[in-house]
Length: 172
Image (tube, rainbow, N blue to C red; front, side):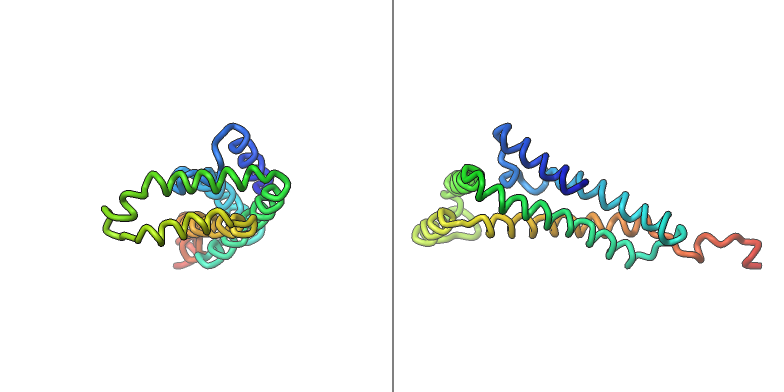
């Protein structure tokens, strides 16, 4: 269900004029989506399959598997959609090149990290040859970067160990 929601969100964003692959990572819809699905996945595992107990590592494994599955299914959709709707890939390339052009002055001469004009042109040429597979890999890697910190936080937040919840009368 989460993968379908991710796909629907990508389609809606694309056809509303906001390319889903060009959204800055801090404003990415995956932050909220992954947060919700990881939370409910870990909570369901803890409550219904593990007797109300959750160790930190169990939360990590559960969360990782959850967001990896969503990322892989949505990534497969991106690959297929890029082939079926070539404008998806073309708009991504155009938007990325436009972003590079806006930062060109800083990249070539003013910034703390500078590149030569030749290196800049080489990067633009490489962008023009991008394939659906590269776009898919980019989506999956960014999903991992978003999902892992969320999983860490939620695994700590939702963990419960037996010792913490034993009643005092049985311990005495």
